[in-house]
Length: 463
Image 1: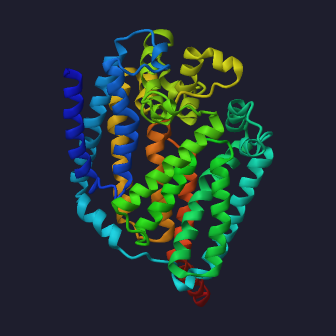
Image 2 (image 1 turned 45 degrees about the vertical axis):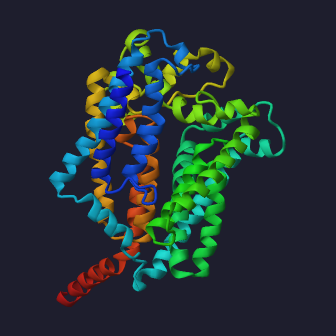
Image 3 (image 1 turned 180 degrees about the vertical axis):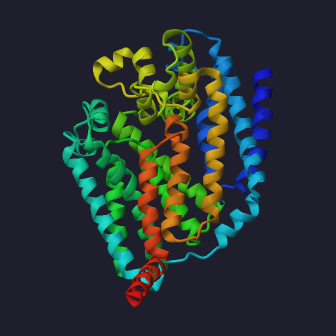
């Protein structure tokens, strides 16, 4: 009863704090902070954390945990996360002078600024080249994948789908992995959002064609390895693009329809990909889709606490991004892989074991223990709040909207993946640089060009 009372009080307090930070927790007005609260923290972490703390999870991962005291320790750390994270963001907002409700409402109602007429031709050319590169990267990814799981599923070959999925996701190395992760997986959906916004704003055939091409490529790259979540997140990106441009007005009737359609799609994917057909598997809280949402994401956090407290020493700098670890002449190690090897060695032997990703607290603890957990909460909360404020205050152009939506979806996903990506993420950096260049071409190229040419003319006159 005490644990549940603490959980309930924390949810109420955390909800209040997150509402103050985000400007709105309404499902009809989704934003980066509200998605973090609902998806990353409440649904994927804290509800499952309660079940584990109460000892009523009956989940196969937790049954591998050797020391039961980490049920309570893990719950306490999650409780600290739910309060300290939004509290830190609230302090940052107050220091910067950020009025969350006012600025978010202004952003929703602000009209979209398309490319300046003088920049339009060069911008369309640059965007077309990037679109061609991303589509070719998708094709390259499929060609370099020895067995494409989605194609095998369509052909009816379901005997070794689990192994094929692991091979498809881990079978890349060297330059191939950068082509796949940056230009195919990351860039293609973002470019499709830009094309979508321009297509809805201008009605031009050029943008409609590019959107159709990029949309098809995005669907293909988000489903080729039969991972279930990427396609759902891409659909949410499109919905957010509609909301932020004013083309889609969400209400509870529409949200209910989307949830039902998504549930049907998810059940269909479980039946076709994993062969789950028992009705009980879909209704049980610790198996099937519900168990995957409530427990599969948070259980590895408790395994991290158990593993790096007793079986494996703390990683320290080895758990940091590779370029930081390289400074100390050590090789980066991902804790999620080490926990998989330690807890489920039989899956590694069979070739079906990947990684046990979880809330970022797991990787923070694996590196620097309890101090690492507290520092990571404060640091990541500051970073995310600054990103949120910056995007709400940037000009509302299609390129900026697309990058904003990308971070709105990928930051919550990264929060349940690890902490090192928040210190340095090459995909985020490169994507920001590329789209930053597009933004200059979209809005300010003619000003820069005029400035440079005027300088040249002045030098000629002096000569």
